[in-house]
Length: 273
Image (cartoon, rainbow, N blue to C red; front, side, top):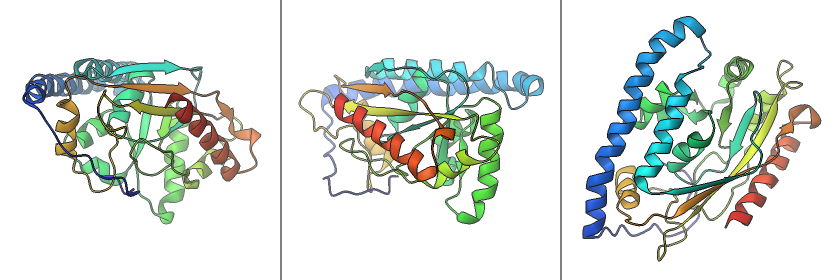
């Protein structure tokens, strides 16, 4: 559940007879693809882990295929522009919806950084753990341990994806970036080697729907919101704008780095809308 509540009215859940038919078609297929993919991933991981340890040369491609297939079943059109980051590094993006996980995973092999609570969410938590998500506690006492985890994963070539806003929104804005997690990028082992890429995620609502149709915020419950989206016969689209990666070593501190990445994200988000 999102912690942001900016006063935007929660959408009214209106599902037509055709919408329920869409749900009856889409939901079982999406469940089959996701949990079938999960079983395949876990089976291959039994071989991959003893051979490669923390490295995952095969299973991230299963995650990518599952996410692309899920978007096709939904009928959500995706457009991606901008340069793709080559080599290891971190990725940051604005956050509007649970769909962000599928959208961002469908175009690039990444490992998400999520709050600890997500690990306990039914269904989503299982998928997140299996696909290598890094779970963090928002506690200053955990900062050193979290920095070590980030360092280990990044030095193994994992591309960690952060949502610096710290919450999802109504898809009408980009919130100020929180800078705390950026401190890990300035660790001596990472600073000279690490690059960070900003990605703007912007959803275009289906025709006739509110512009915040895909947003998930405030006290919105997941199950009704899921049905709300899957019950839309003709879906809208989403635009991913990849910005030129920046080198951490080129910035004096975490605040300067976060400010540049936030500016890039805001610019791409505004253009896409």
